[in-house]
Length: 499
Ligand SMILES: [Zn+2]
Image 1 (cartoon, rainbow, N blue to C red):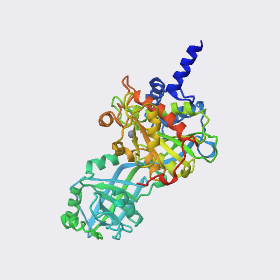
Image 2 (image 1 turned 135 degrees about the vertical axis):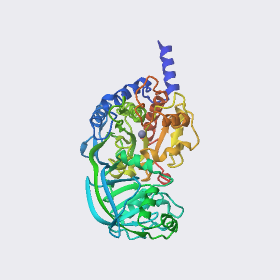
Image 3 (image 1 turned 180 degrees about the vertical axis):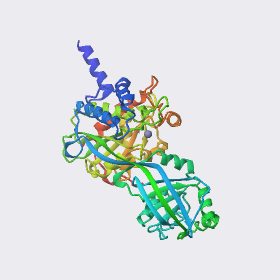
Image 4 (image 1 turned 45 degrees about the vertical axis):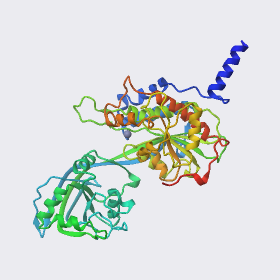
């Protein structure tokens, strides 16, 4: 049947161009993975749990079947990421002024130790205002003391010291034994309190802490300073000066603090497709595998945060992309990185960026895939990281070839620092998130305001995988394009604007 054969030939030309192209990714392809990864059996994929073990075993078997090889050091699939989780347990806090016990009429204090048990007596205390001066330096003598820090930002603080976290670190570097943040307008006490009670996770390699850290409300400070015969309003006013050097509170404190401290051994999973041209660089696909695990107390009907959209959907896309690129003969190496502890502050991605399986200057592009089951088929393509990498035009050209429309605004960049790619952007590696989910910000916001990070982000009949399937096809083509040394030639000068 020559006529029919010609027709098929023309059809394959018009749809897919001259190169043999992968079978399109279907919603059903993605749904199969999401149903497994977001099932109750996977317990919400919390780092260090049975849920991690099952998740990584599933990804490893899928990726191996796709033709990927172990991509981490020592021929392993896994890059270990050591984490530590801390929360308050029990605290006895007694302040003294000139030897007299003070009675504070406020319970707005919450303290967490670096270690499970901490006990000290006669610790001197100092109020340090915003912690650093206009030059970003700690001017107060905090060595061996308890420092009370105003958490709110103020005008004179240099940009790298706007975040309370960085001022806390500066105080610890200056020798503070304890740092207590005073909540304010930017973070009020209940928010701080909730954050500490949720037992936040840190990456052990960046776990610089004082013996004791915690939070008090401004009302607590009023009660404390008044009990000691001082004037809180005056102290607070003095701290507005750009060269404030702190003031002793004339107080000592006895502390006996018990804390929950849990060490967690977790992992990034890394698979690799070797390219034909050694030394021509690498393309990195990334997506976080972790979610919040069993996230509701005993007695509640649904206790598991399954993370179907966030981010079983991204893992499903990565896995289907892996299947289509696993046996392709491309020039550059392609890495697939499933990161841990994204939900705790991009910790797995930071661990990858600090000790990458491939030197960072070899990476041509990082394509992160997160929370993609949002938009239906036909969504425009947005770029998180637009304007930051010099690669937008090329990404758009690939998308247009796939008949996708482009969202030209930079609105999606609002999410730039909230996704794993940021850990690479910070190191001047070009990292983008490309797809439909962040083009339809109305639908995204609706998700963020409802099911996001709760037990209802789970597999439901109405799970929207139409846009995700198109995004998966787009990522297959982006992989083919950026891994092709003739098509994509790196322009060193444009790489990473560092903004
Ligand atoms: Zn999340």
